[in-house]
Image (cartoon, rainbow, N blue to C red):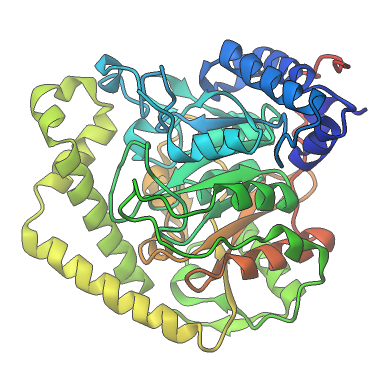
Amino acid sequence: MKPSIDLTAAEIAAEVRGGRASAQSVVERALSVVAARDRALNCFTRVLPERAMNSARSVDERVAKGQDPAPLAGVPFAVKNLFDIEGVVTLAGSIIEADNPAASADATLVSRMEAAGAVLLGTLNMDEYAYGFTTENHHYGPTRNPHDLTRIAGGSSGGSAAAVAAGLAPLTLGSDTNGSIRVPAALCGVYGLKPTFGRLSRHGTKPFVHSLDHVGPFARTVRDLALIYDVLQGHDPADPTSADRPIQTVSPLLAAPCRPLRTGWLGGWFGENASREAIGAVEAVAQALRAVTADLPGAKAARAAAFCLTGAEGGSLHLQALRTRPADFDPATRDRLIAGALQPAHVVAKAQRVRRWFLDQALELFQQFDMLLAPATPFAATPIGQADTTMNGQSVSVRANLGVYTQPISFIGLPVLTVPIVARDALPLGVQLIAAPWREDVLFAAAAWLEAQGVAGARAPSTLPTAPAALAG
């Protein structure tokens, strides 16, 4: 057997289910790789070896008894540290939350992963309270991009994306409010799914913006992303936003050729200010899918409205701590939350009207197209500590502009699958595949075809230490 760190989640599960490898050996190896590599990356905020080995032992016992060990048998995974884990304090990237009691139960999606046989390794670094796009955490340090350790991993789910890219875990979970899955997936060169708003349960996750928060997975292959998506679905009465819809199993779709899709390449706002490399990444996908140009009116206004709602809801959520413990916030997070909380009510009301109008524009566009394309980020990963970059000849904030193309889409809850475009000897970039609400199946079919054609795909980093030898048994 190949070293388990080089195997996909699908391959690991097949080996364990078939009795050719034990879940314990897979997890032992994963823990050793985390110990060896994460010193350079800073993806994990906490590793849970005892829990992981106990879970792996349970999987092996089911296999030994001839019982079905479930579809993700023995597959290691990790979660952004805003997911509740029983017995662990949910930090959400903050030192303020460290004073809270430990979680009394696992988040719904953590429970579903373990019910499917996956093994939790630990929690992953993020921007404080998920308010950022770089994972340069003021309290816990920056997560480094596996493709260049001097550069950011993106955020706010930077630890989740970097852990997958670096081979620390084949699957991870993150959250996306304004782009926090899609941005790090693009910058780290992996697949990331932001499903339709309400598709996956948020129960047991620390909120940032109730009306915009999504949760979703990261993986190195489309097949792995489909496997995890399939097991995460299902209505959850504990989450008021959880939609009561049939489970949309997408794994079987990957075996069939992608049917011809009416694909639109978004111009206007989605083509402005992007680097030549970012436009080139979209162009490669557009040519493969024979996309034609399309226009989604109002994206600029939608992004501005998303900024307003983000600040208002986030500021309101943290108002008490802002009043009593302002010095314990990351200064960049604190100042934006205070500004958001001070917005007048009429601004928030107008933002909600823009949201409804912009959704109508998108739904009308989907009468013409099955899928839309846009850059995931305007530029590749910037150096850690670099506050500003150049866009269209002007100096702009890195943090404020990494989500320029993702914010309008999550503002109206559309499903998006970011596919990695990694050119040889270049930093990764990503392309957003965007579908109408509840049509994640379209995205998976298209992503699988792009991967099969060699247009999209994750590339192993060349800057990390060599992994230790494989464990057998």
